Length: 256
Ligand code: PGA
Image 1 (cartoon, rainbow, N blue to C red):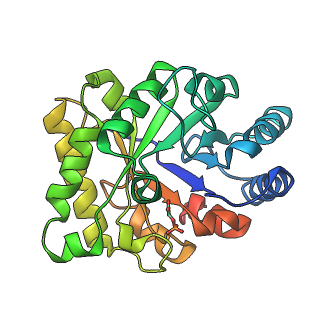
Image 2 (cartoon, rainbow, N blue to C red):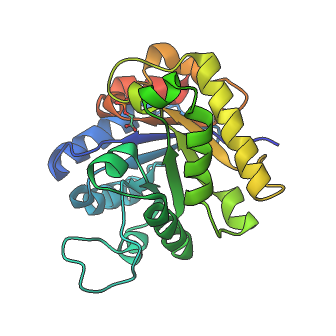
């Protein structure tokens, strides 16, 4: 089954809305010959930038998918400081990252919370990008596979086969995020294949459809090798997504 790769730029807490507009324009220029049907591209700015980017993407008929980095699971209510899924859907947001390791580690997001958020995103007709990934200690102790499996099982619990088939999982080993250390191509491919197997075991018939991204220090010089692996269907890019030329080269991964 052919899966369209998805390359996503996770801007984290960088760029105000004016800077964001400039970056999107630069990326669009860098990718003026890109075939977005071949490789899909989503941009995940901070919440305060989304409306500006949505307006720009619509007005200039850009082919980027607008994304978010987080969301609350509830529809509305007394949750000071939170953003509801319906608010993102109204801004034409297509993809929402959930369970990024920074949110799991710094904001105590558990698999249960990630699961509730994934359900809320799907209910609002957006696509979750559910993140998973082990620490260096877990990898060295030989626990990486079982830990990632428990994250996937917890985060995807109770979803229908149709929902699971439509979603995206991002495998991001924590030790590779923002460190310049990438997982070896073999390790990245092996874990993405493992994740696909876990998804298939959870919901029969979904393993061939679910898209699995690799994330963690993806750069232009390692993108081609990583993204041409059979079980890696794109990348979740942090640092390099803030540089238009670097991000564009990753999106192209040697295709143009
Ligand atoms: P990085 O971040 O590309 O800077 O390692 C990836 C991520 O956190 O999604």
